[in-house]
Image (tube, one colour):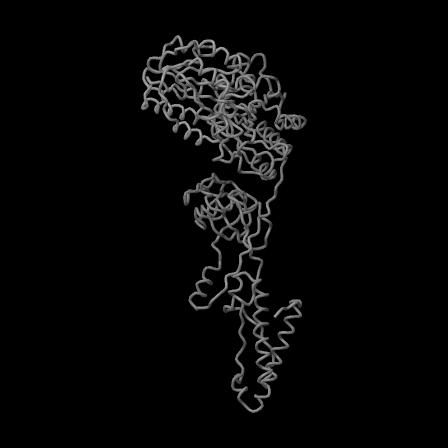
Length: 629
């Protein structure tokens, strides 16, 4: 039966049919009581009603003075029996439908991602049923509070923390609550939540409500037809400047030198800057570290993706005091904030904005070098230059030049004071978002072309050859190998040469390492010179100088000249590193190596010592890359 009437009209019609039934029975009630939902209706009647609601679609009527069965077998009952049967069937269908209509709510499950926050959900008066994906425990999620969570928290992270779902994901009901003071962090179910002073909205979590009802159905022996669940994609606010999709770490000066008043002015400046940047899900993400005696990470790149929430977090930052250890803060930011584990995005440019009032108390050069090696573009904003009588106290007067990505004027910015900084917000934001000018985004780890030239002569032997392959796999493991990143190729040589795999044949780190370890040992003589020429032609493609690196591993003297082919390769823009083992003569190693020789030659007296050369060789490659790029 199909009903196309309004709810009100349908309810009136059902009431009229109930009254007609009683009239036929000879017992018209004084007043028709309200219908109540208390039992389980047949699930097959109403496919439009979710299973959780269908369980409550039923009714009862008050006791009447005479049963319908008695009436149907009494005098006059036979005349109305057929009409009663028809009306009773209509009544049952209609009342069941009416009760389901009343009790059904919009309870379609909403699918979330691991990062979806309660603040991203559409506003709802009551609870909303959501579904968390599996494996959220493998990600670093932002969770604030325990039992009751700040709305800026990841919903699925909070669900894991509370135990409402497990690693396999599942459904959970989210209920909005008012904001509160102090959300207490705790470690629960393998998830560490953070403490937050206060937030404007909260939420709690509970398991779906239909579990007990499903058990009642099973116990009653009722058969139900499972309804097809409607999964609705979550509506998330996707704001942000799509032309500035940067991961930006801000290092703020929180030293005693700054003072509380200027610290508050600095916070105001940073707040205006993030508003100008238009932080958002599809725009720039911002993390923040405060420089003091000991650097303190205030929030990660994934914590705030809405401008107002980020500005509120900046406003709440406390002044720490202490020394201006900017170098330590830069190191902490470079080493901890730009990994996918804590929210950095793959293939997004990395930027560090360093704010220094006066001058730093520690050396910035090691931190700046580490940042450049990690592909972080360091900008430095110097505020208030030291007075002439203060210059003697400044450890490094060129600290700004030492700290930035490139000393070309683009990465350095000066403001005379913390007063009147509004005019500096727009030009600084434009620099941060100038993707084509971010020279340090390409690093030795993600932009190098590496060729391995492997000695497969008889003097090496198969066991030692395997040790060499393990050494090269360990070197490859230090680089970000992908179809858009670092490429690796390999050639084995004796008197002849064999291309084991080309530079773009394996587009992953695991693929390259497996290919290296799977190379079969050739055995034969040693013709290193001709092998260098072959590798230069087959392992490298035309590219800018300073990005091609050939690592030659050999254990003996070559039967042909190595100096000429090596010099020709260097003239093609290939840096040659020579790695000698056991009986390899130093004259050959020096003839092959690029300048400066001492930085491009490595030697081990035995094959087992190669593993000790891995880090030194990688650092030498990166040093060469930094000098030439």
